[in-house]
Image (cartoon, rainbow, N blue to C red; front, side, top):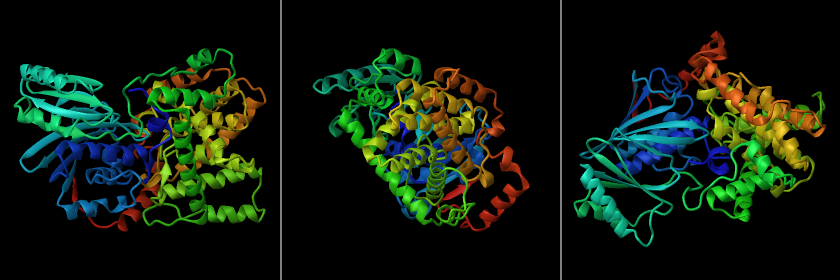
Length: 533
């Protein structure tokens, strides 16, 4: 699947501490609900012992996201914190278990679901920033990303699957789907139909009525930008972008619009309008955080109001722009930690650096929402280069994958805001990421607050410095594509304990463990409708 700025980089709009936990689990839960044709009666969720989820699924919101998805909610739904109780009230029981199965990806969900007499299994991975991939259904390998409407048909034999595929071709001759694939080589086959529009219900049910399938299900797309049609990418690397620009000197945001238009079949006006919508959400969230937030299950109290007061009283040192960026960064992180609405940009753990820098600088220069949107679009294209080659998931690459990516994106956005040239935007992104290689992920008390706040501030201030260096003509020396490749190589050498498992760094200090124990005392007993083992 080609990455999309709105799918993979700037988004989802969500609540919760972690996009790779909350938003991704919610999307997996939504697909699992559709797989069962409604809310399941029971769910067994298994996590590999060597992965990240056994130690983080509760405190970083995987449970909350999964519950919300099973209930059919959106990632920004205000009811998410009460999802466990809602599941229990609806009669759904969820059990969590740790298993030794050697899953290669650290964020692997193994779900076994029942509804009435029906049982299905689903295996999926969270790949970072809220993105997912379903890699097996009923142990049949496949690949679903939530970027199509999918119809599934169970066929007992290869001959049945072939006959079903032919029947579907005839039934859908006037509106052919994007792809029809037969998955599974032995035993039961799954015929998987992907389309930009849901198949007619009569076709989905008719395959069973005709005796061509034993069961059928319709899975609704969970991503905002669908694939299919004429989807293609004009470039996925900085080098290819420069070749495409061919010396025309178009600003980075223009190339971002061209990319997203080609990728999603959207017009330039639609791309800009969607990013303006996101800008307005972010502005509201910053203002909410500055006013003050509250939430019981978090490490830090609201600190943004005190920072604002200290700044107003002249008690802080340094540049006003820098201090306003720190204030906005703090505000967004506190909104995230209080279950307010944020935008994963590129992740929830690194949600503050980019929008805080862009919106603060734009406000100080009296720039409008569309100018802010252009800055975020420029940042989004840098994110496309990163996610095409690597990952935003801290479980894969440590915080260099989250905070480092956010810094690179913000640096390019700042250059774009002040109408710096394309080459300087790319140079700024390269310099920002260079200085954050090797950054580990070690959240205190297993909450995405400390040292996440400081790392977001570091990413935003690094972005400002890198942008200024690029605007002054500093050379990045190592071009962006090579820096991304180097970051990926570093992540492959990084110990598992330092990649968002709460097993290293600050996470295992005595103070961190004491804070975690204190917070556990204030949590409700039990997990609502779930049981943990």
